[in-house]
Image 1 (cartoon, rainbow, N blue to C red):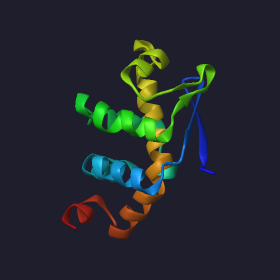
Image 2: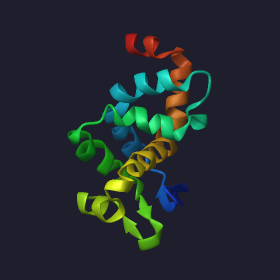
Image 3: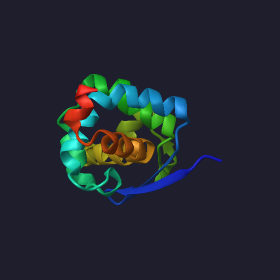
Image 4: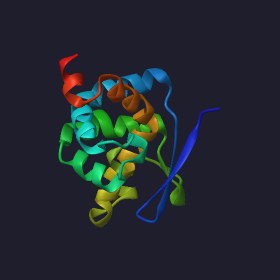
Length: 141
């Protein structure tokens, strides 16, 4: 049975499941050039699992573009089977985003994305960053 996680974002409950290793590796390969430097600069002495979600989501959203929605966010949500519990809507398309979020709650989507990313890859990134010590060392290797 796959591990599941529940997140409350913007007063609404979302669930997701743990990706298989192959899907998680594909996600890592898509996001590592953006995430490693950003997360290393944000985390300081704390692990990724202890990072402030709003600060991290805000910082990450600065580095996203329209292509990232289609190549990272939606595939990550689909592989994780992210679901808005109140209407049992699995988020895997742009139409699902429109049903689950509106202009006022759009930032919640980025907070949710960070929660899911942290659930999927947080331990991996912590080990990777700790192995090399800092983002500068990672960029050189």
